[in-house]
Length: 200
Image (cartoon, rainbow, N blue to C red; front, side):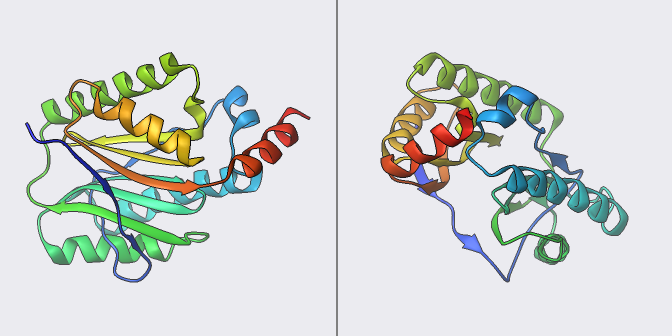
């Protein structure tokens, strides 16, 4: 099987999505304390996910399937929509949610994934997180991990070393067919400034 590593395009005007919408889990207290986003950005990301979910339920119902994950005010949309018009409609809704700065549109125009496929994706995400924890030289909470139809997306605020290390780990994880990086690259000096501030 061929293996691909890609970087998703950031879309700020023409946007995409589908349904039922799954929202990225809010970080626990311990993870919040060491999250590389500001506390304000963390709260805004949670708000983006919740508001988008509510609006999509009201306006498009369950005819499409979308996962929405927000990191540092950037919304990743994955899933399936039956038509291009549905993709664009849902994406337009998300673009109007308060505090959304940009959207990464990774929706496929196709029938909704099966429950078996979604269960498989959940297992793959779990494996990826376990592998990142086992790496020991990476912080799991520096990343958000999403898997859709065998493609694993990495979001986060990380150094180039961390990005490359995580990519190598993820692509070696059973069940991962492709890795897409949606990462904000920071310098080692920036990371050093962030970590002492979090320790206070």
